[in-house]
Length: 327
Image (cartoon, rainbow, N blue to C red; front, top):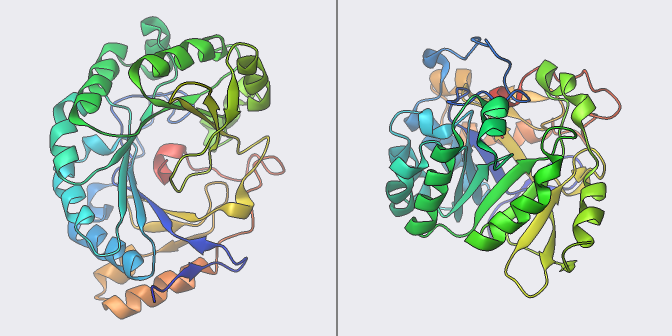
């Protein structure tokens, strides 16, 4: 019988989000402040061998879903080597990648051959000038990456759009049409007060229930479902294959079903995106911990997982930026 990780509230942990870098080749204003240079030093990054040991331990404990994130994971040198190693681990049934797609045209084929099954791509706008204003980058590189991923056979490819009032909320219908055209899944995400960047953008928050009602006036939306370990609640455009997910950490939190933890690039386990509860694995790994001791440490860490986030009650509580934690 496969063992299970259980937190103090009876939730089974089966999903880990693995950050391989806190660096990025874009600079989205709600994620990382302009001029920010306080990155983790490479000596503190978990090595590929250390990452493999940790994920193998999670796999033995019943965690079967792994999502590779950043920052932007494709800026980590030789990342396809790591994903190939992770996909071969016993217990890892689902390996996926979150990316901004800037470098995806270069890496799509090798990632697909190496066992990455699904992609989440951040894309907040289809307007080049607006994209540059939000990210400091070039939209055409992202579109090129998306088309390369589609040609490589990734399925599903999920587009993640952070909806921001007065910034891009006028584009939600255009994004639906774009995903209909290309066979992508679409997920809308509410802004979260992560670090000063997130709190400074709090006036751009919009309740996704408003967006859903707006979409229902134009599209025939019916209840939908998609496999995966994430928190989205899905609707489907009737008569099509398009699923539209709504990720609502603020208006309708999903803490009671939270099945995930995050491992940062420096080997810190974060139990909740909206809390600071954490457990440092790197010192243990570098002091020669055995595999059985590593498993015991992970089980001990799960006891720190809180019942829920407190974004609404204590918006200033989390001081780290999203890029430091992993998406």
